Image (cartoon, rainbow, N blue to C red):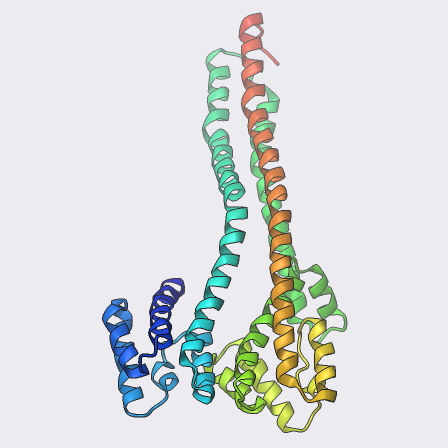
Length: 343
């Protein structure tokens, strides 16, 4: 549903930004965009037009339904007056995120689909093919080979053991994360054992710096910018972090101390520089650029790594299926041709 809603907003903001860039006043642009927008957004575009006509900020009218990033950019545009730029930047950010998601999906979708198909074939062999072989041996009056029963048991035990191993690993990680504040060293082991933790941490750092840099570069003071971020995303990690940083700044702590959180280590180095230069906005913007490039590189590397791993797993499953089908077939043919009645 969020993807559908973002698609509606993306189409409407792309159109609105083009109208504003053409020099059409904001109220007239909203009126025209409402005529072309998807039906669920018509009401909000009309309410935005009414708010602008009454002299109220557009962000105030759209706060209940507007995507988080778009709302913050609109808040920033209240200081710069560049609503068209806010719409264009949000559309650019959404399209870049969609490109990343599409790239990862394209890399993993084909092997994943084949693995799901192989699981289906494995279940079919276990539920239909092996019982058919057992029935044939019974009809021939021969003794059922022991390897058929062992093979049927293995096709149940191995997937179950793998599932239990994955579940146990996930439970251990969850326990470590819950105990990270009470047990010394738990946080370090949780980070070390969590797959993709560095990439996840980099993504959070990029998201935070992306939102904060837009507000700071618009001239909004850091305390007000952090309050706006918390207001835009209530009851989320972003709101909790923004509120904590805001309170530390108000308490007079230094920038590295105030922004202390589980960020990418490079962010701490840039904050130390900003403490001496006073250029917090520039430091946050540089971290946004750095994290964006590193995140893109990390996603590319993860996609290149995941594809061969999935293909190896697929090959192993196909090998099991081939063994489960052809070995009993060969043995049955040999038994019939030689007239043997036992293994």
